[in-house]
Length: 258
Image (cartoon, rainbow, N blue to C red; front, top):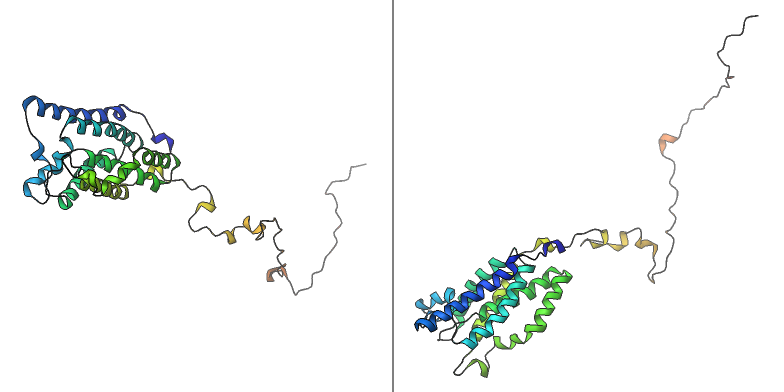
């Protein structure tokens, strides 16, 4: 299974490309005095539907953009390295589904920023690793929790989610839910454990195993009980008497002439 973990240019290229796009859009806002905030998600408004696609690329200020850029670089690289076959789908459908959920449950305000996608990535990597039960991916899941576990506090309303610089906890919650859903949808058969032994089978019964029968309840080695000898089968028996005739073994050779 380790053969599926291959370092390619996309492991570095995909995160860099995505983050460069975010910084380029922010530069356009500053350079040409654009205001893309109104292109964000505005819940339950028809015009706000455009934000489902555009909102992850819009940021309020440079601090907002910087705080999202570093996690995106790390998480996108991890996603591309460990889940290369699913990475593009997770990113694309993660943006769409988390945006739709935010549009449904969000407050009446514009929701912008790539933090929703960050929660999609954290959620997907964590839950998918646990589901595969493959030790490398489980270790990745634990590493993600150690580094980004504190993000879970921002999926609920709290004093930090309101005020002048309000945080879209609805977008975070939508990303968390979306990542979990995608982890269930996208299977990873390449990481499925190959069954080599009978005891790894789901329907394995130790009582029927000849080897396990040689151990008692305390784990002591014992001999198998001797099976009673079966009677000879019918075709080995005969009711007829058998007569034997002794035949002298003579060589069939001609006698030498005198």
